[in-house]
Amino acid sequence: MKLYLYGIIDSSDQVKDSIYGLEGACVYNIPYCDIGAVISECTEPVQNNTKGNVLAHEEVVERLMGHFTVLPVRFHTVFDGRDNLLSMMQSYYKDFRDNLNRLRDKVEFGIKVIWPSDKIKEHITNTYKKNDKKVSVPGNSSNKRFMREKFEKYKLDEEFEKKADKFINVMDMFFSKFAAEKKLKKLKTEDLLLDVVYLVKKDDQDNFREAFEHIKGPHTSFKFLFSGPWPAYNFVILPKNSDLLEDSKQEDLFDKVVQHQELAGAEKI
Amino acid sequence: MHNVVTKSRDVTLLEVLDRVLDKGVVISGDAVISVADVDLIYLGLKVLLSSVETMEKYRGAPITGPMQEPT
Amino acid sequence: MTLNSVIETDFPEEFVEEMEKSQDALPEKIDANPENVEKGLAKLVLTLIELIRKLLEKQAMRRVEADSLSEEEIERVGETLMKLENKMKELKQIFGLKDEELNLNLGPLGDLM
Image (cartoon, rainbow over all chains, first blue to last red; front, top):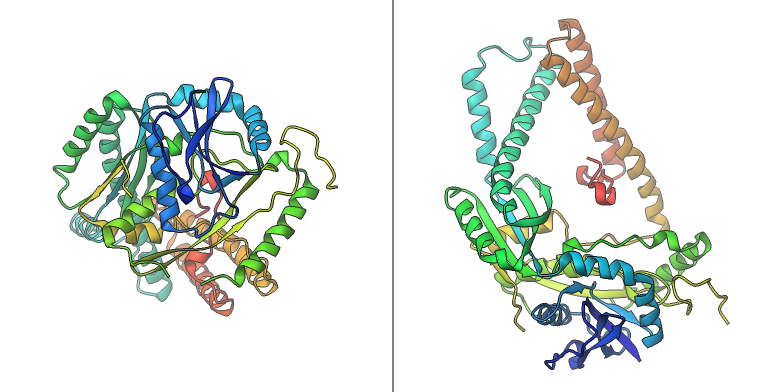
């Protein structure tokens, strides 16, 4: 029987409530020492990979979050049977144990901030024009004009980054008070100033939320997105597996992936 | 074809997908059948999940054990 | 289907747009189609050339800022950089590659450029 894995929990107990997952199957815990793998039985490949399945998966993980510390598992991780699952648990036991200890009673929050990059750049250009009376690169040959334009763009980009850093530092200062860990991406696009996830203690959730409202307040031209509480998706640390596969197997794997892609091609919408 | 997703649910789905597709516990190896990659096609407001390819399990041995020849 | 986690924003469409732009939710697909292999090689080579070109440009800008280039040097550097830029535009056109495509994802280190 194929087993669909939702998460690793810090308990060898049974899951108390009845939780239903993909294909409406009942979700239960397979214990291994003092931890467990929460699964449901499934057909493989999982039929109808849809938004519905993804949300069903997430729902199960969130239900577990209510009672246990969960290491959420990637969508569509399926085992061929109990034996394979248990041998995986054996290989990863220490890593799982460490992560569960580190992530106990903590949740993840995500914040995204959009800022008006056009207006910011306009403001920088106007300030620069007002203050800098000296022409950056004098001369009117096409080469000089080229350099002048390049230089002005260079200065603009530099100031733009500095402004981004300034805002981010202020925001981060507020949030970090209640966060154990964070992962931050600055200027993913020109407009997406900040994309950050914080690991927050469950007890500090309300304080964190308050800090967010505080930051939001004065920045009326910015747009904010707040999400959470999530299980700690972004804070699970596992060693990479690629070095466990020998070279010959990697080629084999590649062939099989290509084969499957060709087969799957027929089913594409 | 799947239902048209309303705008706010798009954001929700994107946030979920961002986490669930390659964060958390990502296990690759012999004993696992997992998503090699998932094709997401955005058609304006529609989010479609199509052609999920799976990597075939091709070894029965556990990850830590010696690799066995297929019988 | 209801999630416990809350996703709150007054601007869902704007965030969808930015997230799609940053292509977060779209993992790269391995495409070993032979027609694409050639294009893939061109992409790699041009990406590296772009990297060097951008580094040279930045270096030149720093020197302009520090006032350490003579007028004649500015003239010559300008001419060289302009020619380089135009050549790159030409090559991108020939291989049908867009600016955004000339980048390398270094995994946890982020993008090259």
